[in-house]
Amino acid sequence: MNENLKAALKMHELHHENFENDLNHWLKYELFSWNWWVLFAFALLPWIIWLKVIDRKRLLEIILIGTLAMIPTTFLDAIGIDLSFWIYPVQFSPVAPRAMAFDMSMVSVTYMLMYQFFNKWKSYIIALLIMSLLFAFIGEPVSKAMNLVYYIRWKYWYSLLYYIALGITIKIFVNKCKGTYIKE
Image 1 (cartoon, rainbow, N blue to C red):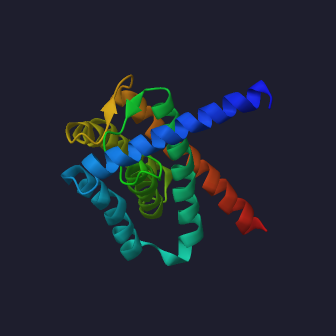
Image 2 (cartoon, rainbow, N blue to C red):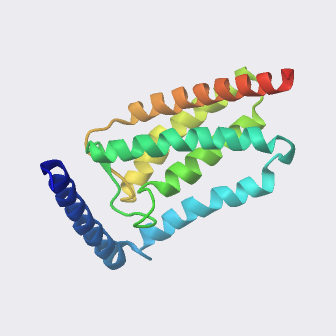
């Protein structure tokens, strides 16, 4: 067995121990706590609203928007945790991404609904700025106050810039895809 494999197996063992510690902590302190129920609502309610109001004629492009919002947000959230920019003291599930309720529900559903209801660039940008300000300067501080997130090396305005950049990027991408598809 070479040194690389030995080191990889040791890392795997440590990772497994860490997971067991996380699972025990989750079962003892997080599951069914009031914070957990808030995350449960954050994970479920946006999708219930989405199901009631979604424009089924535009379902494919709207789902694409949600997916394009979800993937980088979830990925960057994991990087932020690994780099100790923030932690999530309570998580919805010990085996799902730590910020699942935010990244895969609140954020992605909000972008989908914005895309659906604000077709024109001007109205979309206004809605995007309002949403970004609300998420960054109200939603995140409230989440911090509720002990759902703890920022170690992160500022709210970084999030503001991210939400704006993501919203513009995904709309451009989907509009281009839609234009290409319609031309064919």
